[in-house]
Amino acid sequence: MRPLVDAKFAGRSGDSLRFDCEAGWQCRIFVLTDDLVRVLFLRDETPKEPRTWMVAPDGVDVPWEGRDRLDVSAFARPAS
Image 1: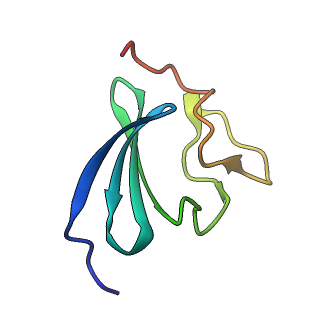
Image 2: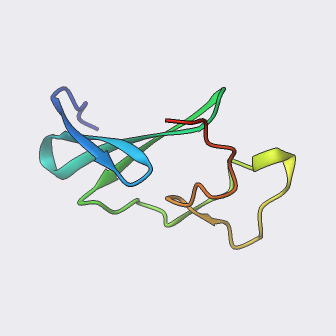
């Protein structure tokens, strides 16, 4: 695996801050609550896996099929 060393701020992308990296990579940062941030790396604007089971808002389990990685609707989201 080759490290990503160059990134350029590319602005806001919906609910996240976006950084464009080399070789088609993108880093998106979501502030989900006052003490929870999601950092997501995409290649060619696509996640490797379309769903995640790791983040369960308010301690409520997620459906077996998982959550869309770009869905932030279940989080409190601090004022921007």
